[in-house]
Length: 190
Image (cartoon, rainbow, N blue to C red; front, side, top):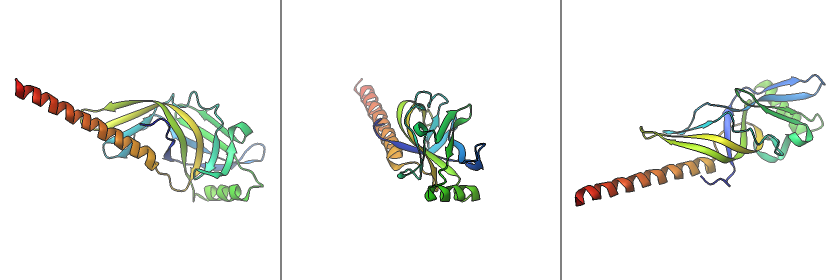
């Protein structure tokens, strides 16, 4: 898979709203879950390892709405986005700007339960591929370069990331077929 392509992964989760101790409004929840196998398409699986975010949380990361760069909800460098990992996954808290009507509207939608899902945008730096004997494949993402987390209306895997995965599977199967043909030719020549 091309490591320069930014991909997104989504999670159906329970985002919550609340008033923080300092009276600020926050949206919080898990943006990624560790060690959960997700089926990208039939026979193709992906999982995020617990160490995947270890080196990236000091990046300049934004919290967005629906991956829209014009709709910034928070930023870790500004202290309005807090991200940390625990044994479950990547947890985040976004402080909502009360002077931003778009952010307040999104807060109200999350509070009502109309919007309760999230996603994150990243580059894969290191992963393992397990080509299983049953014909399925599983990628375990070991290291991520995180760019953003998003509160989303419709979580979905980005086409570019999934297409790159599909291309990798097609190339692997083609190589396997070529190996089998070569082995059969070798047996026939003997």
